[in-house]
Length: 326
Image (cartoon, rainbow, N blue to C red):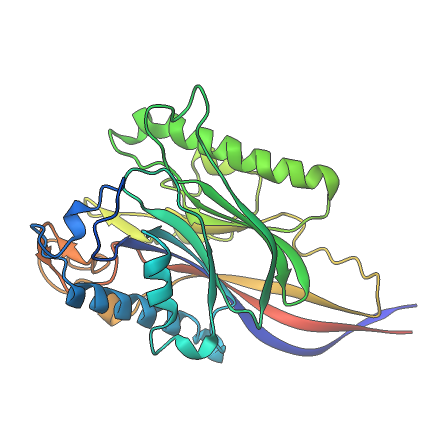
């Protein structure tokens, strides 16, 4: 008879953060980035870019210290312009010691705001990765939106499939725009189904700014476990609008996550996950009509010395080395 023993336990943290218009200061060809240039109305100078980078690095660093952890294992990002800003971010003094790397593809989004995955090579080893477009002859054929980033790799020696999303916004109203997010959900589910066809026990981490709440149809169609549902029902959120909180930023996992068929004498499992909406005093607006909201970078064209209009989210896993005894 086999008995399971837990040799040790520590925290592994996976995050997601919408960085809110994280641009460099260079005018990119074929990208609508004119609002974020030194000579723009917003006066987005090198100093502003440096401060934005420092602020984002500070949040990522602090997020990685929860439960005395030594940095994030990985974090998905949204609204980043290119590899230049990602390189700047991972080389910020607070983050440089982790030796983070990133995976990013330029999408055809006209504003140039893409998704990316930053990871710590000590915890995650990517094996294969690619973007999935939402465009076809019937969808997003007159203008493009962000791709879904797919990454397969080993997270603390356990195979996982990661999908980083930034689904179409609610511009024009939730009801009018909902079909766009339903389509994004369909593409995301199609990726999941194709992998599960070959590996029914595949484990997924589906993260992103979905521009929908946990109870919306688009999220339910994914048929993933959503650790953030309870937080949403309790009135918590990651972004505020008209004095109402939405929880658009979420990290979902496959329903089979807790199952662990042991086919060797030692295996690694990620268990006991806990959802977090991360914020600290510096990240919260203190004054004015947006008091209590996430402290954004700009209020209109006025530099606000902020971070992002979203709070980041995370899942904290307990990493346990599992051994068997006869």
